[in-house]
Image (cartoon, rainbow, N blue to C red):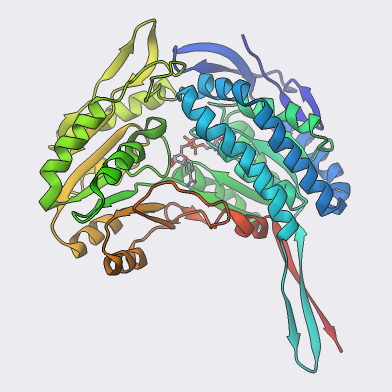
Length: 479
Ligand code: NAD
């Protein structure tokens, strides 16, 4: 059994009320450890540690903060194998994916913000002949970071790195479904010389530990990534206390394919944007719209490619699709496949649970392609967050634009075309925080990241994140 502890004030601690929850290995469907279900008391201890670390950390020089963040990044890289294995075991994703994407990106997050803070500047405005204004960007104090299970260390560090780079101290909670790499991060932070109390990691359920963080009156900002319903709940609690909020929520992203695109590139990328990480990426293009003139060809080629994907144990080198994260999630995704059938959807491929030899209790599912008769059906409107995509044809640009925008979400959109004017017209009108043209999930960490409508409020990434984690104060000096 691999039990984990909270990381508070630089040391590992059991939860005060000694409450624990089971941690599952989804590739086997077995409990393999226990994690704290931390209560208000643990969050209070984490808060106190953060509060007492804040005066010194907020006054620590930019060079020193930068040096420590870059050291954390290097230590993650040195431990790439251990982190990748832990991430895969906890989440069910192929080790190859954790090793190529999740863990390198977690290291990049620290390196990026370690560098970005050295370039972060604020404005000054001269009121000619009267005064000079300059704007200070001061750290907020103690902030809360709460992250989901799909990209565990990747998204956890995406929040923590800018928060501490900007001089804040943090109370952070990873998902209770995938806590392991956040636990390992504690050790790395101590080794890198991060002072005690700057980062505190408390584990537990959303309804207990998470709730204690968002309700804490002195935790002044919450950076949250997760489901839209949870985001709405957090906003309701946090708004009357005037906490600063960044909410990165669900998506139902369109993948729009025009006949004039580079077909092979589009096809290969569409397989990835549909099923990478078992389709459990908020940015996956889960609604595929294909121009009618190439629809039948695309359908045939896409099904052939998807059939060739290997569903298997995450540790095997040739596995393309690992296990879904939990039994409950597998059941939810399967339910949507049943809903599709009642809505006259046609399952072009997949739809069934997969039994992997030697791991019969694991949560495996075939990649699933559903041809839908209407863009308004539930499987085309609601976030499934699994290895399931819908496809349907369109005839006109206006028509596909309308369908693309006709969901409550607005996170990302992908557009495949070589027509420049159409690219510009559509990019302007697509209701999404991120538009990818002839690519998918190509990320430059300097760019703003986030969604509109029910996909969230605020932007992460680059200076946007450093602005979120600081308060602007204008100083006006009369000549
Ligand atoms: P979730 O909302 O269930 O949980 C996310 C985190 O919030 C977890 O740590 C959870 O414990 C915590 N939480 C739950 N209830 C809480 C409460 N009352 N108070 C405080 N914290 C609470 O989401 P999930 O199932 O872990 O993740 C999947 C969702 O995340 C999907 O909707 C997906 O689209 C979304 N997501 C969005 C992005 C993005 O950048 N927009 C990225 C990844 C995932």
